[in-house]
Image 1 (cartoon, helix red, strand yellow):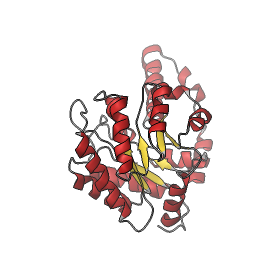
Image 2 (cartoon, rainbow, N blue to C red; image 1 turned 45 degrees about the vertical axis):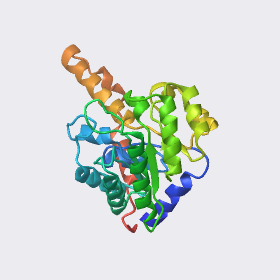
Image 3 (cartoon, rainbow, N blue to C red; image 1 turned 120 degrees about the vertical axis):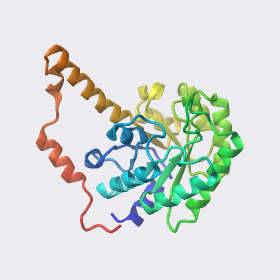
Image 4 (cartoon, one colour; image 1 turned 30 degrees about the horizontal axis):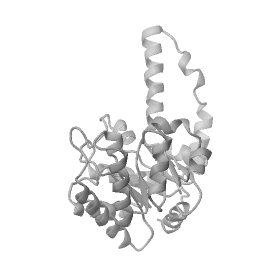
Length: 281
């Protein structure tokens, strides 16, 4: 599928129904997810940072993230959205430039947080947060193809504000033109329902924390349009590394490896999920 078709397909995915968008952290995980039936993919800033041996939150440069995103785009035929944290700068112009560069990398959308990448993860002041979204939306609208701009209100997850302020922000982000609204890790289902009721644009929900207990069907019935995993699959993989290695080195046991996938199964998925070599960018 060429990029134009991917961009169109990604926009259409957000128009109705509910879909899961898994988050790969490298080419292999992207191809496995494509082979298993994913309709679209989204990068994970934390998952990518882990592959570089770095902690999450602001420790990877924009150039590194863009190169990684382009590698994920070329790995499969699926549309890809980019996790671009705060847009790699405080000023609205940084967000706009990041959107333009994301499009050049072949991405079909991206998400931008309202969080400064410094100790404590403080939120931007309300007016600046809205202006940053407005600048990103303007850059997205100037593109010659659809680009799904997701505005995130991360203060509930980071502890810098409560659900009332998150709702105030996503309402303003919607008015500023964002295509998708996202409040990661609300305290529970009731708060998610408040988020859904507050806006008319599509809402992304993160399958983590209290919401990890919900099924896709339950989230869809509430009105969630898109379900992402963030770094959850990457962290589940790292838990296997931790547990298997500890068992070997501390207990002399290889039991945690009993459920390992067969090499041939992985090989088949990597081949099945790969991009069509004849496809156009």
